[in-house]
Structures are given as C-alpha cells and as structure tokens.
Image 1 (cartoon, rainbow, N blue to C red):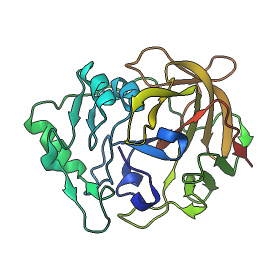
Image 2: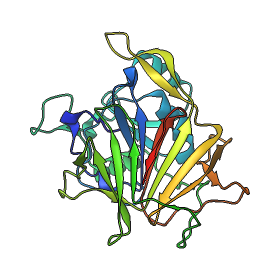
Image 3: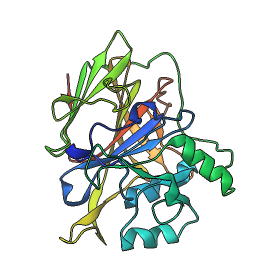
Length: 277
C-alpha cells in the first residue's frame, strides 16, 4: 500500500508491479496506490502507508499477503472479520526499514524479496490462481486515444499519454512525469483500466480531524474504459464473486481482453468525466 502525497513521490519499485490500483482517500483530497507483485522482486518498495476499506474489498480476489504500515480502529475491525495474511509494523515489522531520504511518515520501505522470505518462514506461502481477466495480443475495436486525463483532486491529477514506440501508456501526475525512484524512468503500462464505481463517505474515522475513509462499491457492475494499443474500449465491468477479479465485457456481453503486460486500475466516482483525446 503506497502513500501518494507529493512528499512520497517518486515511488520505489512501482514500475515492476504487474497490477496497480489507485483510489481516492479520506476528505477527497488525494489518492493512494495498491501494488500487486506477482513475479518481480524489486529490492525497495514504498513509501508504505496504512490500509483502507478498499483493500479489504479487493484482497480476496488476489489471495495474497497484504503489506501495509498500520490501520485505524475501524479498518482493523474489518480486517479481524477475515482471515487475510497480513504484514504490518505490528506484525512482521522486521521486514520494514526507514529511509534517510525523506521525513516520516514518507520513508517506510520494504523489499519484495524480504517479504517473500518472511511469508515462507511463517508458513503462509501458497499457490494462487487469479481468475477474471482475459488477455489477447490483438486489440478489440475502439476509438483512438493518445491521451487520457482523470480529474482526481488537484494534488493527484492523472494523465496517461500513448507512447507508440514502446507500446505503453506513460503516466503523468499533476502535470509532471511520474517516475520510479529505482531507475528514474517514466512509468508506463500496457493497460489503463478506468473502473467507474459508487463512492461514499464511510463512518470509519481515519485521523484526528475526523476525516472518514471512502467506501467504493467494487462488486456488482458499472461502466469501464480500457485503454490499450492507443485506443479506448468502452464497456462494463462485472464482479459478483469477491474471490474473482473484475470481468470486462462489451455491449454484446463478450469479454474485452487486456494486452499481456502491466495494468493500472483507476477507481473513479460515477460522476467523473474523462478527458479522452
């Protein structure tokens, strides 16, 4: 679970995550990122921050180990209702270290290799089967899309631009190139998936000012845009089983395949209007 304050950027190891999910945070003023590492093992990932209800909703689909810094009382109560394998500062905290490059709380890091060694040592490593996504090398029909703008709060506005030479979309945040701390390169991915979903203010208090975490309806169905190969494909997402990932379908009910590679999933309120050009 990555923090996404300006002081937390650039992020370490984020370009090696096979899936990254972005969600709106308390008080609607910023976003945070949740990265899924399947094969890669970057030596440094972070800065790592606290859990939110959205993480609990998506965890069953990945059946993995959730690594975060901590959680509020309300989120801890939600976590206690499940049997998720977790690593945080209060449990398995020896996998973390504080960097000297930034002030706290934006300097908590770990290593994917160290995390995997930890889960093996405590006996929770197990094979995982991910279900839901479909893939194909050939892109389905769609409108031309060389740029996507997402109207997140001004601290976190996001743009993606098509890089035809590399066959990826490049990420920009608040008008600046979004880079990985480990290599200094602008982050790119083969798929950008914009999931429209109902958002609401929960009753879980997250800070001393009384800000509450955001609830996101990630089961059921709504609109989706999938950006791949320089084009935008409009369709619908569907997720009934919490143990499965989202299914993406077109207006005829046929699957919309992703391009093999890395994917970023952007959770946005149903009121958002995307800028596509």
